Length: 335
Image 1 (tube, rainbow, N blue to C red):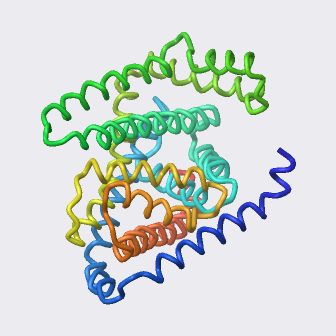
Image 2 (tube, rainbow, N blue to C red; image 1 turned 90 degrees about the horizontal axis):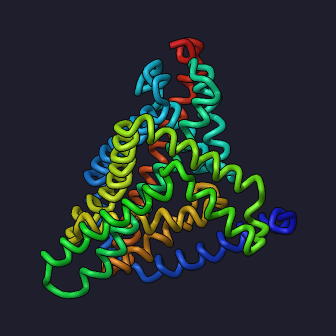
């Protein structure tokens, strides 16, 4: 671990240079006449992307509010939206990623009258449900990408997708939400047999804590849990609709499920490159790979997709700056 910390800056520099070289290579092959035509359509698609991203952020904020239980009734959804947004933007551009963002969220919640225990548990629960919903969509995407290649048996593919998704959803819920704490026990068994240094006692204890938290919450608040899961799944779908809007505006024929596949794929790339502030270069490379996966060709399209989504991020970063100034007012913490 100490060696990793020592070479961290070097690793980041190598990743950044490698991605930059790839991006320059992509840009050099762009047809600027076609690109200019696409860029003329950018204002309308950008406004739509901002609108759908706002809806996604609102769904996520509402899901987080549900994770707070009874104490969530004491804080407004718009205040949660502001706190969540500042924390997420800080996490995206800070090298410590979600650690910095979530720590800031907890401090704002405490100032707003939410106990530290509820603030921390609500964030852990929301992260767990977010991961669970992303796994659910990944399973859907994988099944779709595999079985959609079989031909025109659309009804068969749809039926099979529904069946497999229901089975996968049940197994994931059983594994993470059952009061037998299967997640913690499984990791503990793996640690005893493999002796992996990654699975420390602290890691196992944290897994048991999250497993217990999720199990207890589901046991006593089933409806809230299911609603939070639905809202956080819709948050992912709204992210996918950004791809859908951009590509449809460029007259590229793409389905919503293709867009969902792209969103979860790009999110995986961003997770792997979390140490890079803003995932600069990582997200763009992920866009390129996932466009190829759904058979959308053309560096001009990739450039516009990356430009619009990066512009959306910069827009919401500036909004987070405004929100931060709002939080400096004493009235905000007392409301």
